[in-house]
Length: 59
Image 1: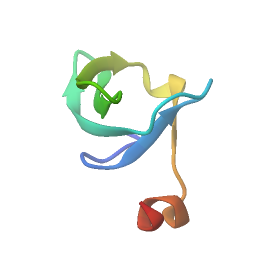
Image 2: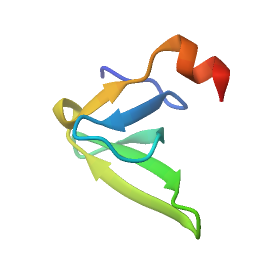
Image 3: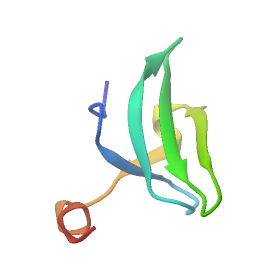
C-alpha cells in the first residue's frame, strides 16, 4: 500500500484533493467534497499521487 488512510492525494490527471479512506479489492478508496456533496470513488494506486507535505499543512 503506497498511501495511508487519511493521506491527501490527487488524481495524476488533476482534479480535486481527495482523502484516502481505505483499501478494497486492491483499489484505493477516496472521498472528496465537490462543492455540493461528498463524493466517493475507488482508484488504482498508479492513478494517484501523494500531495506534498507543504500542501497538506497549508490546507
